[in-house]
Image (cartoon, rainbow, N blue to C red; front, side, top):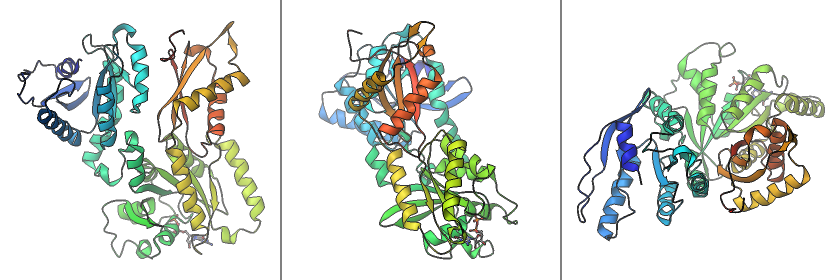
Length: 450
Ligand code: GDP
């Protein structure tokens, strides 16, 4: 179907193909690949599509599994002209179970061919298929873009942490597998808002406050913890800061540390000082959580010393509405880390927002919904033409990401896209999380009359 052609194109070599005669084990082939400035190692595994012998099939499966475990990212190719076959479905099932992230490649898309097949592949639940033609060398730039984050991540991980410590390869995982793993929860915020106090309170010990003198020996920034039987990794910037430099903490807050904690998190808890809420720096941190696609919970700390609680809450909500309009409904929990108050509410909010962040809406439900919202409020005319909005799917979750297919992308104004995104959030209760809506030109792959 074109795997070897792509392999040869990436490695720039024609490697000899091991004899394909029945009964001969096809070994996996490896080679050094490159696209532009990116260098990587490519492993080509044997396909299962033409295997009938059981022992050969299981050997090939083993080979595929070994390759998968070693890889930073897997490419699964299908023939876009044929569309999704039962073998593709079978393979995608295996890939979804594996921890390795997957990029789906629609081959034989030269000069825009195979679009229907490519759209069909959203159903595999492996994200957006990248259209290429390995034969003609088209779409290699798109493949470059798709590979780049994994390339950067692999490079970063080799230099610093083991990625598995933080579960940051979650993106394309099986939903159940993600839920079984420890929830990655970061505690972020300005200095002195009470992050360390909160971490201590959560852990139920004075472990953190023993400070640098006692020597904090963890080499990772994630502290394994359990709350009501659920495994959590607490990712704590205060711990990081102590480890990296011993200075007056009022003065020192590395934005890098905060970014890194957010990057490793699934849910970030932004701690605010109840007396002094939503300063510019608080909003910057909240913005980074959303931009990184993580779920956000706001914990208003030191609530014990707030006199007019009602007024304080009103002020906070008003400011959030105007300053963080891109996510509505961020959960806000008032706590007192020092007195251990509000912790259960905080953790409930963390688990709730984590569920929302993982939510998947079925294609059927989405398209019934689309019909209704289009009916309520049509797209406006642009230069005398009205865009046809044809189809919507959710190719990705964590955070929920939607793909909307329209007749021409230019004619769909931002305001209308916002209307749709807001309606999605409201109707499917996607509160407090970043929500992504991508508009694509394309046809409904299931409607032949269109
Ligand atoms: P961090 O820099 O964000 O880690 O902040 P700390 O945890 O070191 O706390 C800063 C100061 O706020 C300390 O003096 C804490 O005792 C105080 N503090 C923390 N939580 C609370 C709280 O819930 N109520 C009150 N009144 N003070 C708190």
